[in-house]
Image 1 (tube, chains in turn blue, green):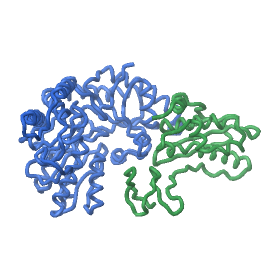
Image 2 (cartoon, each protein chain N blue to C red):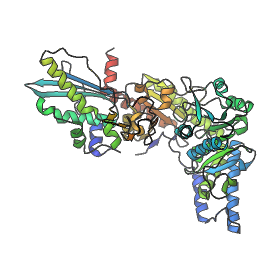
Image 3 (cartoon, each protein chain N blue to C red):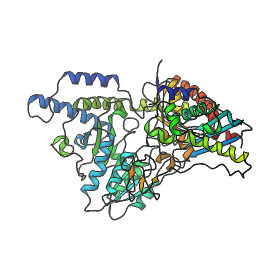
Image 4 (tube, helix red, strand yellow):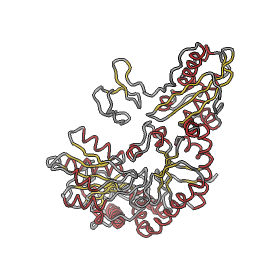
Length: 391
Length: 170
């Protein structure tokens, strides 16, 4: 059975050109890029080429403003803890939002337990922040604003440019978690006005195990990992060169294809939104219609629970993701869905469908047809549906 | 994640539905993890002649409901009263650890339905169907995370094991 992957927010396939480049890189037996000898210098050249490619993708002026890390989560931890700790003599207040990824929330919570104070902003019913509230939240002792570019559960995109302007005006360091955006939508660190930005290669169809952190020159950040002088003294530890070479190739392709990629993904998403009413009823679309990722749609389907939907769709050869509490392992309703006003019951029935490079319009139809059957089956079992239909 | 028995009961749940003139109804719900289960009993000569369920919940919750109805069907009321959540989990040949917690609804719903039947029979005023809507999270002097059951310090504001925010009193 051909498996239809509609869960690209969890993991993307690696592009064939990227795979090829990585296989070739393994064959070259690269030395340590920090070594002074010729093989070491060859490795360093390959590393710097990849850095230049990634720098182009986010339009930063100096490639050395890009630091390679092991994943998006490391980048985020580095940015938040690094800025807070490096600037704690200036102040100990952080501004963030209620819908950030756990990497942000838990990094900040760790700082909170060390005495930092936090203002966490609420969002509207699609998960958007009002930039004015960011301005109002900034205090004399604020040292960091951290707001995500796009949300991994709803796909909604934040007004980052406006927040960047506020941060610049008030001279506050601004970190943006753009892990789900870089390589999917155009990102320009100067246009956005960010001082730090976290991203991950797998989002733009590179390998997992490679993250990136943009650090605008002059920004005071403590390293997360102390040790050698790798990554311009910003991140110790021998680089994952094979992965980074793959990330560089993926970045080159992203620069070339971004516009058509966005359009193709967006068409699939629009087809699903347009055709959903013909297949199921009583659902809420959590994704903003104008400000959102082209590859993701979040749907809360009433009276049923998401893990059951995922398991039944899996039987039909379809992979999707759910934000149901039952499926997260933590057994808690998603903080993002509760923040945008979904009830616990509606949060339970939330699916995240995310498209990737191999998806076709036929996949959308296959999914909708299977979804209709699954929803009918589960609603027949559901006491909530019975109550609703009896009024 | 789930074993074959669990998946079989999830894919082909037994005794799904409602009984219109049920002799006993039990409804339990758990707003924290969002599961809800209703059990309907038809009882003749003190024996469970028929049992049906409806469940809003994950794969494990559906499988637990299905297995519970299979175990209870045909049993006397006295025998059925002895069915525990552990019996259901054992019959399913085990559930993932974090799902044991979530699936503790099954036997509770059955016991509630039996109580409802006995109250009716004895002509007692029937209390409104009450949901079990709080996770137990203090046993004795110690505090436990309401989400993952790991022991936590009384003053802590989040669970170090599962990172749950613990704003409420615990």
